[in-house]
Length: 108
Image 1 (cartoon, helix red, strand yellow):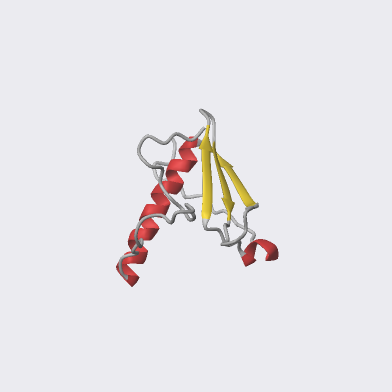
Image 2 (spheres, rainbow, N blue to C red; image 1 turned 90 degrees about the horizontal axis):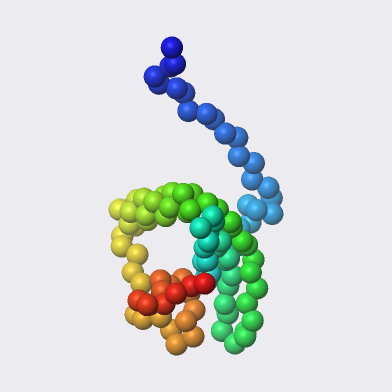
């Protein structure tokens, strides 16, 4: 007979020195296909006409949705502790920063 309360598997996660430093990003480009979501993290700086992708994450649609849920949960916890995160005004004329698509926009 199977154990009705299986113990969760413990995973040891190693964080390398380079990865522990982190990468600052103020722009994410998200594309998808039926099989995966691709998230490219970059940063756009004033006066610099070119942006380099600093990290690319490729994941399944199911894991992308789990990430969305985890971010929502963590934002709620953050706001309970530190107050509402305010997003100031409309996107700048340059379109910098993380943004949701304007209604009707399609990403291919």
